[in-house]
Image (tube, rainbow, N blue to C red; front, side, top):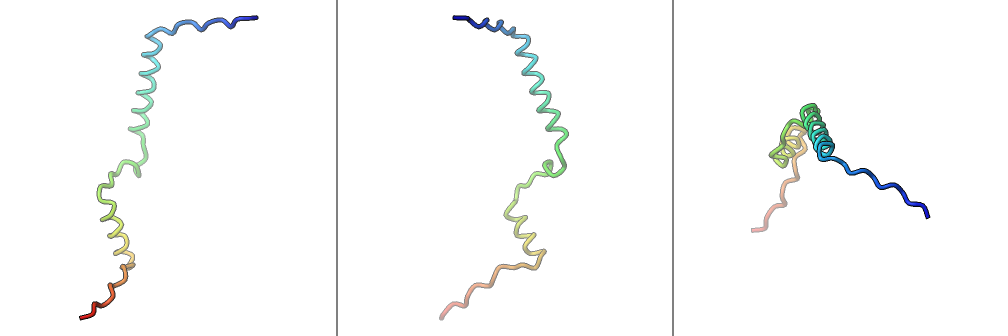
Length: 67
């Protein structure tokens, strides 16, 4: 029965370096994101209403009420 050699212990400095590289990559990707992702959309329902009104596509009028 053959045994596989054990992997060497990883040092904490290599773990720190890998963590730093991942964070740096994420930061660079955040800074270089496209303009479409930079605009915050807080009022999406209001935006949809504005788009519908600008297209002239209004919701149907409610039915008349019986008196």
